[in-house]
Length: 555
Image 1: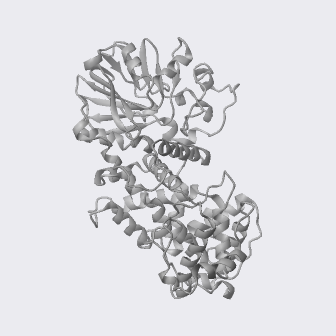
Image 2 (image 1 turned 45 degrees about the vertical axis):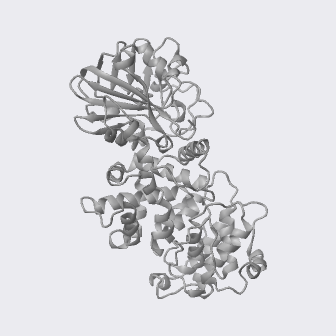
Image 3 (image 1 turned 60 degrees about the vertical axis):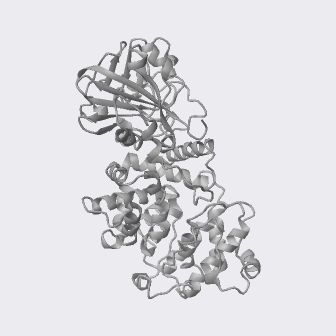
């Protein structure tokens, strides 16, 4: 172990890593490596973990010219000179206030700053990389010298495998990952998300801390276990662990008063002190129990969020608009929902659209109860929000991901379209959100391309005429029927429209059915919404509104 001992303060290090017998790692198959990483096979032996890290990082495909240990030895004296390493100024792309020391000794703590400066010299394209200090500090525990650590970090940064995302190096990538994490929280941690909305003015500001929880606040023994799996499985692991942290935070703190005036500070404190409530094994167990979307679908969602940011000109770090205040009290007026209720709805929608403000497109009070006028005012807008108030004072609605003009793809035939980002909700008499059956139970769907001659029951409902070809610029991860092997008619698409009616829900029974005169509607409590009533089975409409999403930065 002596060769990997140089930068470690063993008084701070977990003593169990010193007492385990040395092991060897001989497997090379991905599935076996994956299981060993999750089980912590090399976590209890310092020397073995160092060798495994070196092996895994050496196998990362990199750019042809990637700085190595010799480059570091050549440049470090020129860049650092005789300055005290502890006082070295850090580049702007890292957060100067967050440089973890973990179990490093004084030499190791100084080495972190030296390596960061040398990386800045060799990677001028890096514009935002707050996780870098943590990664360097962690790898120094398992490096023979500074040059070896430098080379390993460079290989991670220079990875050129488009399917293997590792560390965010631009503000655009980082910010879109925060939005993606927010989307995932919205789907998989609804109780925690509800708490965030209740106590925070800007939910995305809270979720923008997600990488800090992992690469800054987590104790050494935890972040090392996460990194073990990250090097084998990639970026998706980080989302899993961050979601698990949020779930544990909500479970442990539920019903307790906040410890500070900021939910951000409370979560950071919880993660720092996580050893009091959750073991590393339990954290990973929770993380891998989450039935997360596929890597491909998460990548598509990330791309969609990046595109939304680019279209709004948000590519460098700046003061972010308070997303929760996208619904401004002074210029929002609805006959159905209050400002607070609209903000609650806004907290449910995908993060890339939460950057927009609501825009009233259609209301029966002004435009009358004509389905044709409903279509003419709604078409050309994607997504849209449908709000309904019944004469019995019930309020319900739906977030609809797809332009209503898609209904024409089926000709005169009533056909379903839409995506799995759609959902319906109830606000009165009590608040409830209902998700699409595929999103709520992802085990019912298998990501992948569906053959054109697929002969499942769903295929007869979702014929090629009724499922439009996907536009190349629509990057939702829950795009259309062809992304899922749908098991039955229950799992059909979400929305349908004709000159005679509107249907929202699909499945064995329609969840929400509106007649052509937009005066009457009915619901059927199918398994699309877990057999819970959206509103009365038959109802009269008092007011119906359709809202679009206005891009505040591009007019």
